[in-house]
Length: 170
Image 1 (cartoon, helix red, strand yellow):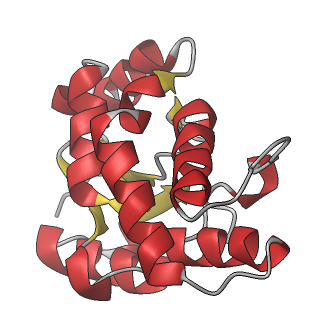
Image 2 (cartoon, one colour):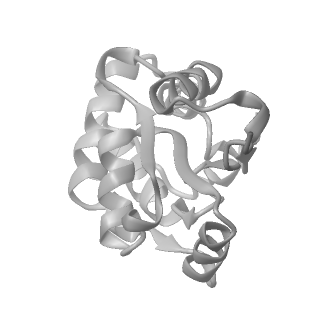
């Protein structure tokens, strides 16, 4: 009996792509839409967790609790402009090709909305290197990474013992 191929689940932000410029611009746009001056905002340490967690932390600095409004403003800006500011890390295409050459199946598992992740990967010419792209969905489905990974395993028919998650900070 042949073992199932290794499956590699990769986080998107900070692993495959540098998304900080677009995320920072969209955070600034959301804060501006709420009437704040985001001068000198440093969100580098906040990239990775779900958007609501990031914006909640940022809004708390301003004593503001309008999270739903901030999320809407952020996603509007990010979907139009911010995601286009994302760049693949140098050598990423070759690294992905090398992994695929070993027979590994590659999947994206990100806290970012799946539709945004797909658009970013298409924009960067990387989407065809993945067997699947998975992320959060509207309404809060799959916002937490553990639930997302469990769903990826279920949907893709993967065996946990033959999977590796790369790049997630939690």
